Length: 352
Image (cartoon, rainbow, N blue to C red):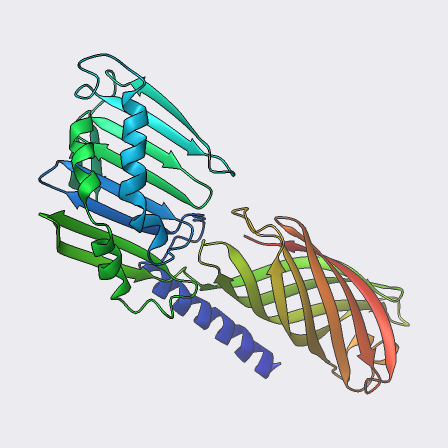
């Protein structure tokens, strides 16, 4: 019993340590999913304009290197939508959507009623945008936001060589970026990258304690159960919870009626290790399918010792989340020194 108490204590301490590290980190929040994780902001102070690229995956040069040419073409078509002499200097918003075959749809609307945009971070004003010209471009692999005081301000950045930006970013150690993402802010003045702040961010793997209560059947026996697990969650670069490895301590509480008519309870305790994959990746709340293996510790005074579990007993199981808080666990016990098989089924309720 002492060794299991030590295991439970260890699981709790590890979880508290992990939680403390998470709170002090700059990783993604645990519930954040971002399908465009690479963000590159390029500011042009003299032109009073900036561009924000949000990319599914930064690929070196393609998206940015072709940007000024594509922007020049877009501005040409946007100007064709109005003959108003004040069209280029009054606030407007243009939305451009590219479909799968390269065609695009452009929608331009006046934004005279658009309010001034104020951004505040950590109680500090970080950005104040008066009404101006906005161009929003959406593609399958990217989202691009362009802002300028007027359309002429945006047109001035067409001549910028955006390879300067990619060269600056590529100078970082990106060959091993893997699941990480890029957060970059660059200031361009007179055709030169004057300042660059480039950060490589981890997707935010984390540990957490996973308690559960449930009930199950082994052969013809009904038993309640309690599980305390320590799970490591691994994200992909989009912040989705993809994989889980969990170390668990299980308590199976068997009962038996003695000859004097009284009930006795015999806890069978064990440890298990499991691997899980999330089959609801785009959901904030993951649904796991897991497979695992463990051992059951038999004690001579346990109710189930003589009746079900004898000698060394191995447990092989799978689990399936059917809802956020419920898990079905079919399991097989290899008992009598792993020579006999007993099958069981358990339903767990996962505690928050």
